[in-house]
Length: 414
Ligand SMILES: [Zn+2]
Image (tube, rainbow, N blue to C red; front, side):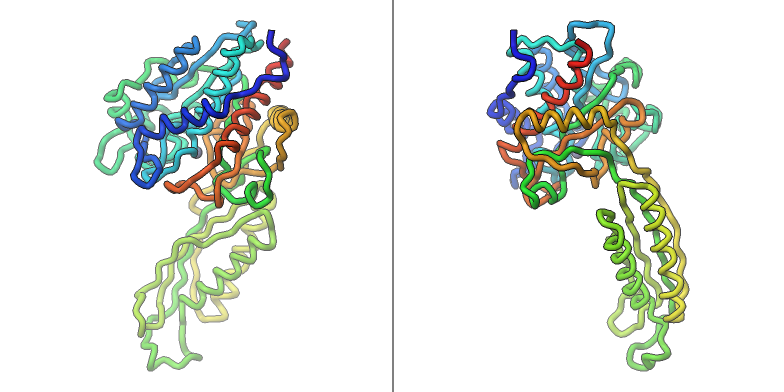
C-alpha cells in the first residue's frame, strides 16, 4: 500500500514524453506547429489515446473531438476529478503551452498506476479541442461548447483560411465522436499551464496558485482632425489627430498604472494618410483593459472614457469610442485553490497567488464545474513563440503539484 501523501512523479518520464510528442509538428526552430484537427494533431491524439489505454484508462471522444481518459476509483458513485488542457498549438508555437497540462496530467496518472494507488473518485484527463483558435476562430472553442457558451453546430461551421470546416476535419482525422458534448461529466477540473508571463520567473517562485482569470474589455477609438500641409499649416491652426491619439495613449497607460495589477494597452494604431508631409487627419486605435476584479475594471473603463473628450477638445478634434468585447473576470473555486496551495507546500515549492492574464479552457469550464489552475514559470515570460521554454525541473514541479492537488481533493471522499 502506497502512502497517501508521498506519491512522487517521474520528471524524466514526463520530459521524455514532452520531447517525444514535440516531434508531431516539429519546426526547424525547435517549436511546434500543430494546428487543431490537422494531420499532426491526429498523430498526437493517437499517441495520447494509446498511452492512456496502456494505463488501463477508458478513452472517450465527444462530438467536438474533446478527449476524456478515465481511470476508475474505489467509488463508482462519484463523478471523476479532471485534469485538462490542450494538445494543439499556435502556427509558431512552443513545446509547453497546453501540452504540459495534458502530459503533466498523464505523468500524474502514470504515477498512480505504477504505484498501484487507488483514488476514491475516478480520475480523468481531458484534451480540449481547439484551445488556440488560430486555425479556427474563436479560441477555447470546444471547452466553450462543453460549458454551453457555443453550440456544437457553431463549432462545426468554423472555417479555416482555406475554407475547410472544423466539422469536416474532425471527421477526416477520425475524432468526430458520437457522444454528446457535456455527457462526460466531472466534479472538478485542475489545469496545469505555463504562466505565459514573466512574474514567477522575476520573483524566483516555482508555482503560481491561480485564483482566477482577469476580466478583459476591448474598445476601438477613432480620432478625427483635419488633413493639411505640414509646411503651410502653422502649429496653432492644426487639427492633428495623431497628436491627440498620442496624448490619449499616454492617458490610457496611466489608467493601467493607477490600477495595478490592472493593465491598459494600445496595441494597434492606423494613422491616415500616414504621409510625412501631411498633418494626420484621422487615427484609429484599439484599447485593451484587464483586471481580475470587475468593479476595478468598471473604474478603469470610466477613467479611460473620461480622459478622451478633454484631450480631443483641447486639440480641436473629434473622438468616437466603443466597447467591442467584454470577457468578465473569472474567480476560481476556493476549495480547489486550497488544494493547489497545499500541494505546493507539501512538495516544498515556493508559490504565489496570481490571476491569469491570458484566457484558458479553465475559464469556460469554471462556469459549469469547480475549476482552478496551476502555473509554472516560462523563460523570459515568452509564449506563443517557438522559443518558449520551461525547464525540466519546472515541468516536473508542475506535474507534482497537479498530482498533489488532485489527491488532496480526492481525500475528502475517503
Ligand atoms: Zn494554452
